[in-house]
Length: 423
Image 1 (tube, rainbow, N blue to C red):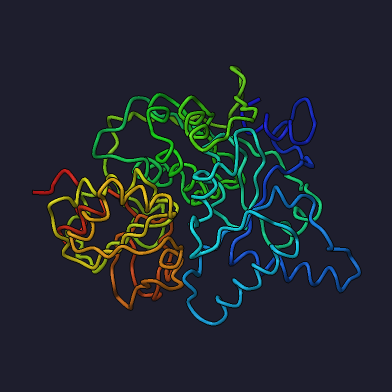
Image 2 (cartoon, rainbow, N blue to C red):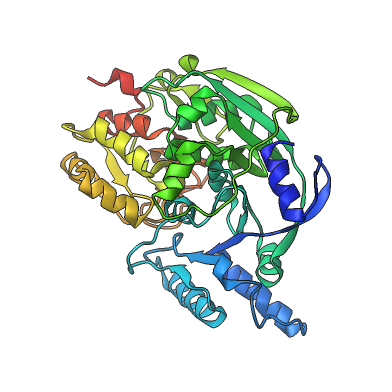
């Protein structure tokens, strides 16, 4: 069995499982945020009217809550949703509630690894499509809808069809000017946005294990953009060290068997990777950066669970140090812990000296909700994960997806720029 199959076998108490087999699994961790939480609360209210008990959760200690999509509150409804969420966690005894404006908080998919809330070998479900991100730690992580999340919170279980697994092997280290974002965009360009529909995407090879934990998280995050059920990387010493630094040592990491089966294997040579963008209006509409260098920009956005981890901000600081931005540039660290670390390392001063705006952790601009949405005909280069029509604002705006290095270089020149081409 491969790692995804092993985790699902353990969680369903089976000796082995096979692709397409339906299994009922025990969930280890569950998460809600300020968008999915109110939806789940509505399901609870509906169940209660039907005479179904919703008096207690299966295990409040295994549930955590993030405020990230509409913080700071965008308008009255989002403010009221935060209150609903606070009442919910209080009523059900959920202690892990990361509140905006009260110390550590941030984007949910960042908190999962920053706070070691999810561990290798676990089954983790959450009310958000990019829950796949946390598979970089060696967990089975996927998003669920409101009704399924309500069932999990009440019962601690859910069914899955065991997915087939596609294996993506990166041979050799990526060049300095290339990041994990370039690699995953290349993959999505190759297989398409439905190329991994209800499949697992597993990453491996020397190039993947050369990557930092932050970079690996970018790979698994964007498996969602290929339609994958989950993204996953077998844990190694870097994962062990990352979790140990956060006080997490009690877990059982799993790895696939040496003869594990995959539906298909894709191999890439790291030295052949180039800085890449996804052009409007799809993550699969990819091009090497140098083929889009004539595109003039209105904005550069460096943020989100995909592009504002510490290593992302480090890459941006490397580009912006001693330079000035030519277009509106927004940089939003993905969590307060990352913000503080960036401050301690001098990155925030570099960003401000370059003329960029530094803001609070939030999903607002990424999902086109608030905190910097795009106007009609505006063109943005962004470190986010989606560029469908209207994703970041007006339906007639355009978003180009890129790595933090490309986004920062483009902010300096005002047009899409390969970081190798900066003066």
